[in-house]
Image (cartoon, rainbow, N blue to C red; front, side):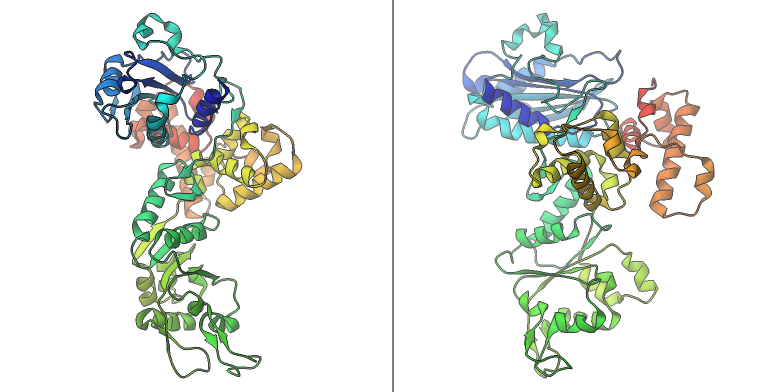
Length: 503
């Protein structure tokens, strides 16, 4: 039983945090020859609306999916919920192992992440379901479900905290860090990071140059290394240079190398970084800070596939794939005369935008768990108080993932041995993030565009909900959003008081 408890708890800990309500059922079907559907897992988080009724289990659809294998995957929506149904295939078996049904509340802000978790769980369950016992508190013929009201209740034996979910006021256990499929160094469950990583995987197989654009701290080098590791040059070297860190007087020598005596202090011959990357990938971090004169020489290397060391007359062949990254708006740098248009188009064969952390708040707990894990802490033993979780997901994270890593290190240093991350243990800037109101006068203040956009959206959301007497569906239509989109913005901006209101 301990092994079964561990298996189910580990799977549930990967569930996206901060959601507003779902139910999951896993049933074992005809491939095992037991003659009846058996309830294997029952998992849910009661929506904040206490009057919400539990979803009715679609027994007919579950039976066809688990026994006949139809449909392989199906999504639909009823009056109050989004549904997803997945069969659990077994390699080499005539029929499926069973089926998984997911019901999400209509205000679920992380719907894409929950559905992705559902698909990953279905893929992992198929091959092993025949050897698994039901989760504690489950089991028995599903045919009796109509006569068992307790089927829709949380089984006490499963344990709310170990499953990574929370009842009102309860601490939320950190999830098992969910890596993006195919790129294990990148952690997250959001649609934004999944789309970014799909683009990385698609372009990696080719040999074209790639330009990564993202704010400082978003993990540009991690994705650059992924392009190299997943590409045809993986067996050769990955060499990187930060264009903002090298003084201009040394830049040319570092990139191209030099002959002995080429300049004062050049006592012996030296090969450059571009030669070291021959046959592999050369990563130019913060390419927007490269001196203009060197941009011309780099462009020549990209065009001719040759370079010359300083003080040398002959050219050397070099075969390098270039991956560049910048937090600057290179189009604006071109207009200002600080970046060459021809180099920009040489680098920008494929451009990939890396989302900032504030655009994927559902990833915060997964990243936090990974950072604690790297420093020897067990994230399974750490939970987050609900108000602390709201603040972490609402904070703007101007330093992105790097800033979150600093916060994790700070918490470990100051609160070693604590089992719950409380709001008053977080940095002052983060504590102020939850539930911030917007003064209309703030909208007239000159500030960075993305910050101004957030302020305006927060103001309009509150104004629309107020104008619609708290009816969020009506407010969403007035704002040109789906209901789910409105709830995601409310969660993203930490306006938890709006979720408690009716509508």
